[in-house]
Amino acid sequence: MDEYVDLAIRILSDLIRIPTVNPPGSDYARCAELLSKRLSEIGFSVDVIEIPEDYLDRHYPYSPQHRGHPRLIVYAKKGRGGRVIHFNGHYDVVPPGSGWSRDPFTPFIEGDRIYGRGSTDMKGGIASVIASLKKIYDSGVGRNITVEALFVPDEEAGGVGTRYYVERVAKAPEYVVIAEPSTSRRVIIGHKGLVRGVVSVYGKQAHGSSPWLGDNAFLKASRLALRFMDIYNPILRSRVTSAPVEEPEARHPTINLGGYAESLSRKDNTVPGEFVFSFDRRVIPEEDIGSVVEELRRVFARASENVGARHDVKILSSVPPSLTPRESILVNITSRCVEKIVGNPPAIAISVGRNDSVYYRGKGSEVITYGPGAEGIAHMPDEHNSISEIERSIDVYLCITRSLDT
Image (cartoon, rainbow, N blue to C red):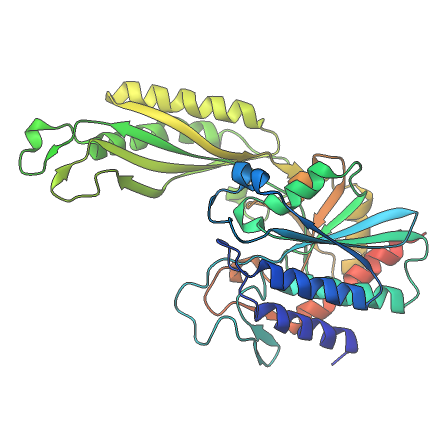
């Protein structure tokens, strides 16, 4: 095994052993300490930044579960001038859930695969970045460029770590590579935006044995949801993005209703007086996030009027779409590097899911997502990454940096 791949696998194994589950993030400090040590060992200056609790109170969606668990950003830098290439990765992981064949926090290698929670999303990307940084400077690259790495918590909670960092820096980096899983054959140049919220529908609570004395909010919510989709689906289908996508259906904005739904009484012998269901609206780059919010309120109001339901709409969070032009310097360089290392031109697309690129793009950075592993394996039982994918990512990161080092 190549020494840099071996380094990446050792780092990845150490990272998997630290259960940085979000929420609550109780092991973030251990992980930040390990990352700081590894980056210092390869000659980078390292700064550890703690996110203030009052910021987390406002922006962390699982607050107050963060309390008592410091949120630490690890920032590393080498070089003093020229262009700035900035690598980003998040070290938090989702809970392991059930269905694993082995302990999710004990790394296990079998053939070309390394197993463990976070191996793909996205500790494999972090390990690849650190190994590539060593290879970059061992190869004599980086003399005319500044190289940065930023490893953050809480991407799995709306990107709080990257958001805090980007908001506080005076100038965003010119070129950003987010090492999220894309497979080595795809370059992601943006993502859809999103609007998340809940709809509360009101009826009249009564004893379940006397339903005629109540007004069932669940039934009202069901009729409201169906009427809403009757109205809204044709609107969504009429809109098509010009950004590159991988699936025909991904060209359109979408909405998912009922990811969670519940009666506030939570009793089978009670006529529900209030019923709540969620919505998740994905926003194409051509849409304006504020206009989408107003449209949602309008269509829910129309549907509610049609079925005779009282309702409220609450917006929980919103993130704009992100798109780096295909003709940008970073997209072109990355495409050439992938073709050189992998052997074929990469697929270029936007992601239907959100990532942290939106925060950099909002400040003018060129941003791509490129990293080892496949998105479809993330968050699954028996999550794993490919050692070959990790090797290719290391070499592509080196190639990108070399191309900018002029």
